[in-house]
Amino acid sequence: MEPLKKHKFAILGDTNVGKTSITTRFVNDKFDDYTTSTIGAAFKSKKLFINKQLLILDIWDTAGQERYRSLAPLYYKNSSAIIIVYDITSIDTFNMAKFWADEVKDQENTVIAFVGNKSDQLSYRKIDFEEARDFANTNNFIYKEVSAKTGDGIQELFNTIGEKLLSLLPISQQPNIFIEKKKYNFWCF
Image 1 (cartoon, rainbow, N blue to C red):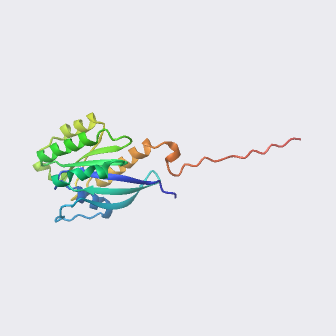
Image 2 (cartoon, rainbow, N blue to C red):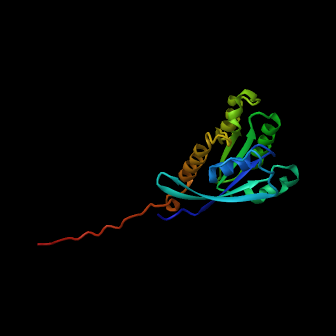
Image 3 (tube, rainbow, N blue to C red):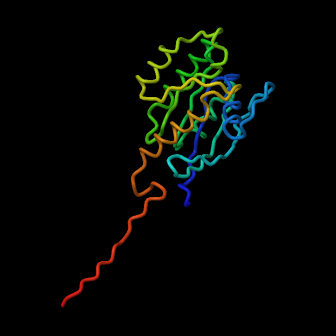
């Protein structure tokens, strides 16, 4: 199977929302309660099969601290997809996610997902599901709630982004599509 070109993914959001945990859960199917803060950005790669088609994802997990905010455009510019993450138990992280949404909403040919993490902590929820979903829908973003801790919704998130990404590609750039030339033989009697 011939892979589609690599696709750059950038993960943005405030510090401690779980960007690294989401990436680690997706790439390695692991969770660590004691993940340290990312400095600058971290990189991981993963193959994703969507409808029997192979996508290679280069995932840039950006630092959430304010001092690294000016570096973020280096990672989200020319991305195939941007994932904006907030913590459903924190209003401040939701407001920061809205800031990032405003920063990236004009990126051309980019799939953007607005993601609420820590869905395993519903009893501590501060952000109403409908409010976040409506914000995402208004901006034409994919909306998902996930839990990096339990893994709930992580694979579905990346599958949904992958499907949307494939639907946006011109047919000539989609993998595994072959135009067969047919030879016709004519017999004359």
